[in-house]
Image 1 (cartoon, rainbow, N blue to C red):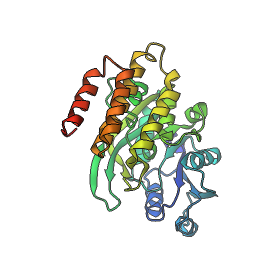
Image 2 (cartoon, rainbow, N blue to C red; image 1 turned 60 degrees about the horizontal axis):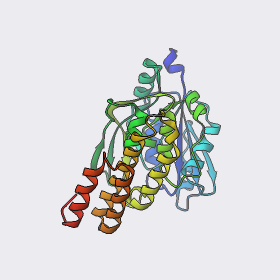
Image 3 (tube, rainbow, N blue to C red; image 1 turned 90 degrees about the vertical axis):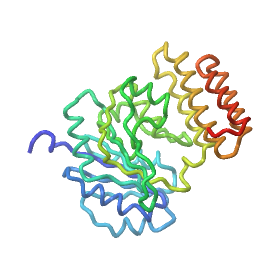
Image 4 (tube, rainbow, N blue to C red; image 1 turned 135 degrees about the horizontal axis):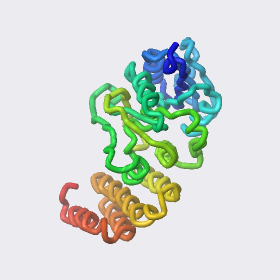
Length: 301
């Protein structure tokens, strides 16, 4: 057995009311071309048939844990605590992988020891398999830490695309269970602050966009995104904590204001654009002014 094939991978999967998807997700892990994989599924207090489906699945790679509903972060942390792999990969229970994902990511990380975590280009589709968009790899012009501050969705595939070295995961600690959202972005920021990141441009991850997903609720996602940026400001170098952070913070506010306006909440969008302007009165002035004018004159944005 060569060095690469001697390494093991622990797959961490939180599951809440995922009866319609979880078997496909599990099969996509068990059917990977790389052999040394353990899959730890934490049933997070599901009220549907998730528990019964897990009980009847007899796969040697599969370990099932159960807990009262406590959220994805608690479920992931519990799985990490009992995992044994040299690498940890994350997969949400309603998403799935293509067969060579683990093999290709492991090869990348073995060839580049400086990379502490990686992800892959990702197909985003509806629950019926209709293509929505392609989640591509971020540009390489700036470090991953700065890219994440500018765009909290910079890590392609996010929780379902990322693989991380176990020693790095141990170094940065647990998912933050106190956050009300964007716990994965918070983790990627902490990883990017101490390690290099890379992304495979091949589409090896598939994310299912649920109609009732948190990403549809722009108000809660806005607050959690900004909370994560505030919490992790100290990860930046001293110079970047000033103008760069304020520019990035204002940019995120602008992004959610555009989303807000498109949903018909024009007054709230204008209020938030003025807030963004106050954080970056020079670098974001033109953008904020143009968006406010577009809203006031009923132009599309």
